[in-house]
Length: 407
Image (cartoon, rainbow, N blue to C red):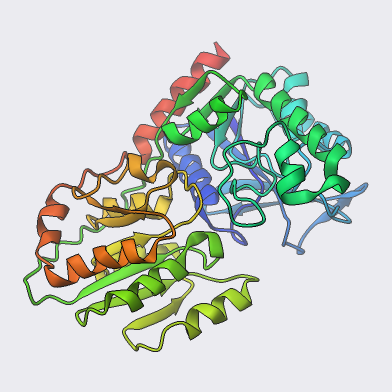
């Protein structure tokens, strides 16, 4: 099959969860004999583009995967807000006329949402994988401007009252209608968790969302085989972006509250534009047992996961299925997660990790203290870890979906 994956941003400039998901799927589909290509929006890329009317286009290769990157010559302020763009459709029509495709797989429609309409005109079957809330929440994280979790946009009305104001009223109502069109037009919608599936079904976007769990590439996975005694020192690891909704501050507050001498914290991740937040994090801890390790490369994960004893995912938004959580379990590293989103579909409290009340530093501190006082509880916990699906399993399920749509 000839498969085009489409998403809002891609390697090498962008390398978070959705980009890794797409790259892993592309490589596995290639191993299965399919021809793959990625279409993305070069939001921060400025090199090597050629002009095409009001757009810029370039083609490149990343780790053996062919990529087409497009962007507006002058990027609109609402490029991350609107779902469809009529001018972009013309450019995408031109690209589609040169590509012979059997399947379009959209893994994030931000910035490139118009690709669905072009595929529909050409009667190319389409698959949409939900990775966050962007189609029903312009902010993508289903959290209001005041930091309150939001489970419904109320057809755009709540977006007006809680986040954007009346000046955005017409655009928000139109955006909701466009999102509804998206679900009506796409041939198959997929979610990796029951939680995200149920959120979109609850808001009447779709009543038929297929569940396909994210798979991990086990090629460089190395089992963490460390055993613990009552005197062991325990390293808790945070591996994510240092943005407020990821909750690093909750972990640091819990560490200060726990007051246990045999625990350490390693914080990995980049803060991007959140300089004030990052400075607040650093100033909140005066203990040299907390180490800020900076950003990290994917290839460094085996070494990093060798050196931490338990992963902490203290998010204060509805996480879907964080790939770092799955990666830790693949390495036989248990995890502590907040009780939000799809994470409790992966972590069973007291079995392969612990679950605490989101945003509650005291609740997390009790878990840190419990592990610090008796590190041997991690031995049984590691023995009970169920490793996540392999990328081969995930790709096989998508392959079955593609084949059914084509036939």
